[in-house]
Image (tube, rainbow, N blue to C red):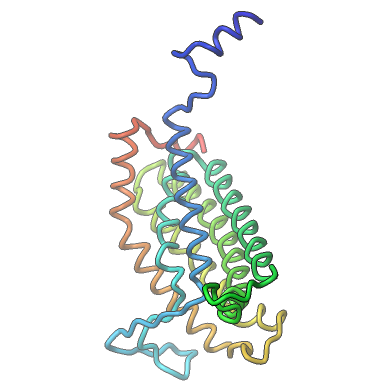
Length: 261
């Protein structure tokens, strides 16, 4: 007992010193959660980026001439990169743990948002306008919940597909498992978030000011949003290789073998 106490007090052997792997995992998790939460919060705002040209899909009456999606896309693509890095170096259990942490923190933030909305209002000139506050955070609830549901579905699909492709290629072709898992999982993510946010959620929480969107518009928003995610998944492929280089050169970490996942 005395020996254990002396060891715990030894300044050269601190009892709670983190290893390099633990510090890297901690920072990746923190950055992942931050990107997820800010994406869910600002996701209430939609943006429109015109193509400068248009094309038509067989099941649509109107041509697609722009990308229409939420501002959550400002940070959400970063989670693709982080998930793949965590999956590569800490395995599917490590990736799933980060997913559950993100989901738990997302639910916590949702609860705080609701509590803040129902707190007694201070009628002062320097206070934020109550109507504006309620309009922003009130209307964001459905989108927020939709984002969490889509996030969970997409993350679980991404982790499973990433592991499958890594085993299939025997740990080779980083671009294939990173891009392939993101491309497939984000198809599910795009459809789920659009369906819940603009149809199921609005039916469950009926509001005359926000009726459910026509199904053709839901498909259009999901398709154009997925097109953006597809392009981003391909565009960030070089960052996957850059992330591997940083992990190796700065932290001395090596990817887990395919059979040890």
